[in-house]
Image (tube, rainbow, N blue to C red; front, side):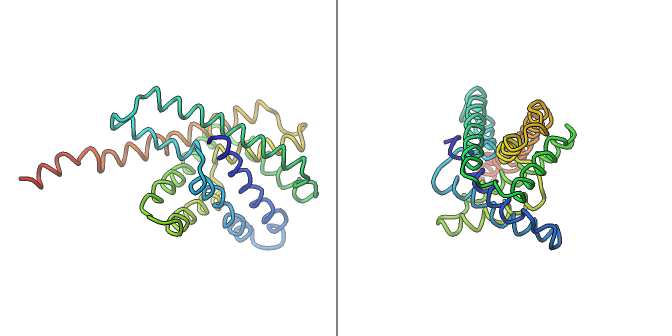
Amino acid sequence: MGIMAGIFIGLAFIAYITVTQTLGTNVDPGLSKLLGAAVFPVGIMLVLFVGGSLFTGNNLAFLAFITGDSSFKDVMRNWLMVWIGNFVGSVFIAWVAIVGGVFKSVPMANKVVAIAEEKVHLGFSEAVASGFLCNLIVALAVWVTFAATDATGKLWLCWFPIMMFALSGFQHVVANMFVITAGWMISPSTIAISDMVMNNYIPVTIGNILSGGIFVPVAYYWLYLKKQPSTVAVATN
């Protein structure tokens, strides 16, 4: 399931790159990002509708530990296995895309390398903070789909939050796994593996966990679940 989710996010990023490859040089950069961000949510939609385990969404599983429904060990095991699965799927689809000639045009190749280079040269704290902002949105986007009872409702509920994170350029570790790996495969001399890991994968993973894995579950546990017994008692009295 983790591998499939990595593939879906990679496909969504290909669509984003295809839309924005040269658009930013001809029109306002914000509009270019908006048009690219409009197609990116398809990756999350595939995860939600056909099945997949996405690390950023699975960070919400920490709530199960808080409520006592799962052990800390099980949550950590889930996160680790899904992270690895996402990485495998992302690397696989990056390789297939390159073999398939998706990035053979100069604008496409340049766009991928430019995005990858920008991501691997982030400062550690910058990457953590951007990762935090990303999964603050993504975790809530996944959560809010539970309010819908049909596919149309789930589609519209997840579309706009995911589009917002992609438009804002926040750091999503699974999306980064794809684009940084693709950039490295295209131009290995300009991207160091150590920078991929130390400047992006690790700090962005930390940031994603801090928001989607800790901040959101803890905040809403305290706001709703923790107070539920006392609320019931008051209502009964």
